[in-house]
Length: 215
Image 1 (spheres, rainbow, N blue to C red):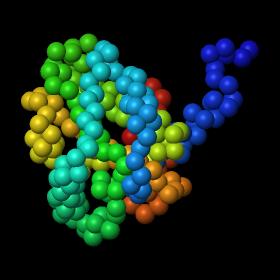
Image 2: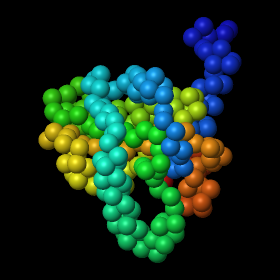
Image 3: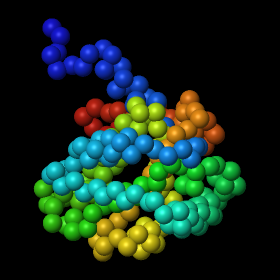
Image 4: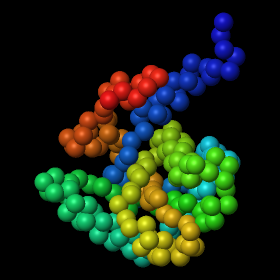
């Protein structure tokens, strides 16, 4: 018996296509993003699931070129520090393109709101669920962007305290992502880090267990 809640075959295929063709992008054109399209992406993010319906996400649109340059400088400083921490893979890492901050049409900083300690529902033993909820919101935006034909790159190479000060974020809040959003000439046919030989996708079987954790 068909499930009356199931999407149509075309709708179902579109959902899975967005999932499998979503990429963490680093190459962008500078064409502006249509404001109505950006609003649709933010609405998609705002409809993400959140524990206790706390909706801990905050989206800060960066429109000042000088501020974009300052964010880029923070990311570059962390890129160098990360290379030093990688030891023998440092030279290989420095060859990777890790962001498109200066090229993308739109730049968003995603942060966790302040006063999150007031939200206890679902977080009493797992306070990090605020971060998990915000990651779900970002994934919503990412999938919607792919369906719209826009590229998104999540940049996490920055010192959160430095970025928070730069953006005048209130005490207790925390930036967790710099999102590069924009048009691209082509989407990668596989994850960029897999294509560049940094790491390959694990087999699903390594991540699925039954009843007990398997070593």
